[in-house]
Image (cartoon, rainbow over all chains, first blue to last red; front, side, top):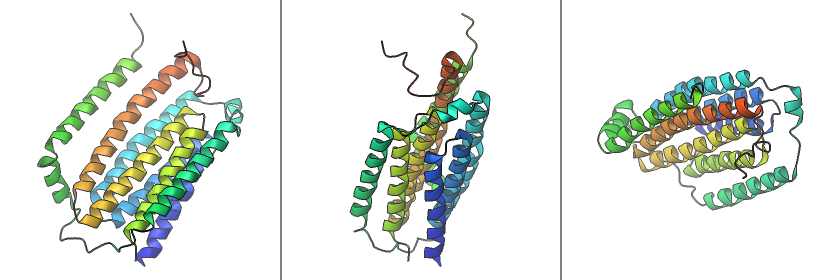
Length: 164
Length: 100
């Protein structure tokens, strides 16, 4: 049963990831990416990471993808922009590199076939993740807030009209 | 029974698709989406290993990665919009004003 769900969600993520890379239309790619993120969020939930599954939907499929779609709509890429994408030397090399990487990684990983152990009591609850965030990972957590502040300032500076 | 190798293999496949997208595509926005794919594959690895060892630290790191990706996307999209306003294109082949 669990295996069947794993394969369903894995198929959703992999197929829509391939669509992200292969769609000609940027907007279609963005919508396929939403599908991939949703599939990965379901896998997080299967790994008992309920908090992160919800964060994935909220932050990625919510905020980040809305930002992406705003930018795509803002640019309003026309037809000729879409037709310019064609199979090139770089495309062939890229597919070869990707295939090679996938083969190596999959061959290496197939030796790790121990089943997942039973999760400890309360594993992956918001309480446990929050306790770790505010004890062992306090300094990275604070640095993350500083990073967000820096990126807000950076975006405001870049989006400002140039009135020198 | 779902094993650790299942999740790691899926993560490797997603990562490779992301690499392929970054190398093949010329549209800056799609390159950014491929980077998101790779970050998600890394997150899946963190969470799978955390589940394997019964340690929630993997989820904590994945939380940081999500926050970092959000910041990265905000700055990156601002740069793309600025370049688009200046050059009128998002094709990486046409953006060459750093080329001296």
